[in-house]
Length: 293
Image (cartoon, rainbow, N blue to C red; front, side):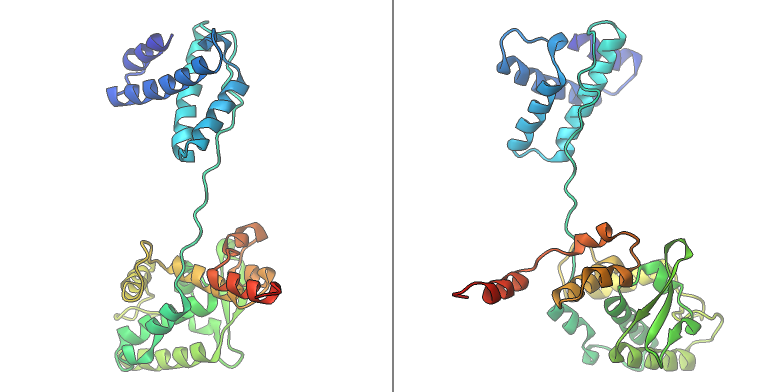
């Protein structure tokens, strides 16, 4: 039955030999499993519970969800073929659900890394590109904005007196995001340097050296180059600074609902990913809660 299926892949579906080998490997792994479970079992007598047991055994051996799901996909394709050719009378893999992929925890910078990065002595306060870069990084860190949200800011969206931003998020939904005195001073200095050194050709807050609205790719490059100075994270994007903002807020006892609103998430489920516990938090909880802490 397996040989018929492999020939079907080769000659009717015109699949590459590499694909055929991969499918065969998955099927042989499953065949080894079910022949070892019970004597006399055949492809035709396999049921859904047996497939679920096989998936569990693979996960117990440490296989990643991605690999297990690839094996299950091969099995599904095989049984659809076998059913269509009358080689089996049912498809046991049809309703079997594979393991969910683990969502990686968001990457973020430590507070001391951000302090080092934003140290004003490391930047030229009279150089437009330096002032713009530091202001962009500080704004991401203090507000948690998305890259497109920062790019879309206009001068009119910045209320320096009230220290808040009017942000246009996904699906044009607007929200008000507060900020602190440090960012207020940085924005005022940036605007002064910008207006002295760059022609104003747009109402945008952040502009290129030619006076046009800064591009999202330029924002990405600015952040990546500067994060490289203080961290070894594989990912060094503006979104890492959004993660850093959320992590810092939660680590300093902000409520998760407040963080949700600041980030512009529609669902609290999206914000929950940031509720991971750092070692510092664990130590603090231990000292407060344990009688011998």
